[in-house]
Image (cartoon, rainbow, N blue to C red; front, side, top):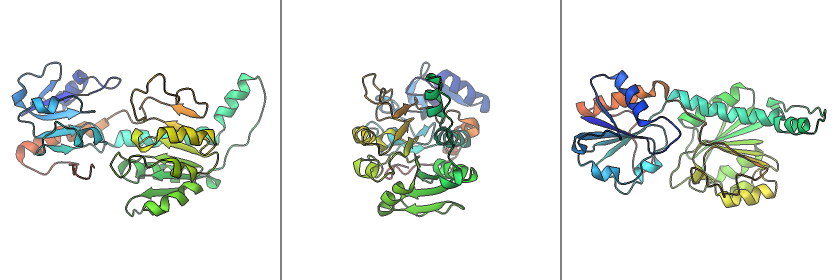
Length: 311
């Protein structure tokens, strides 16, 4: 059994770095970066961040694609991935907490009027503004799975009123959990901040559209740390121009890297970050090594994905 590492994009780990970290966890394992793949017929596990090109078709004995993260949309829909190949993802604790912190950082940025104070400083103007009170502020979280649930609990612990939304019923102590399409517009209308942590699936693609955005509070902030295709970006630009929402923080975009000519870059009510909300894998790399062992032993995999459902 050999494992091939293919990151699939720049700006994160290199394949060589990741191969070295996995090798340290299991010195006996056959771990290969894409730069030195050896004989492709020996590869049974492909570990990827983004699955691109026709690489799966060139691996005749591929049994498992191990996603190096949570979102698997680039894997399950890949045209060259044979139906029999299994897919597993990670549910790492460290990036889940990082994403929750990212959302909290931008909520606090609004609560503490940081953009307004920066503008005042640029004018050499002393302009005190009262910060928002968390108990008088409603934060909504779209998606209550591994990452969204952590985000909702962090907001709750910071004393915000927290609403959560998911497609199926969820229960989180101290969070007003709602579910189903009919509940979404009313929830959006109650929130001062909406944090989108949803995965990309056929059911969520374009969920944040003109109708959803129109239901938001005027001046509210949308924070998308889920997937870029959740948001209809032309509809978002039109909504921002109308003040509903008042601001959008986008860590994920429909095209990444975001093209230089995108109007999102220069819109005064948009904050762009380059897909950095969750970064470190932490101890989740142990799950990659463990899944290789389980695959070889014929045992149940950790976090195996239903390819039909997409998660």
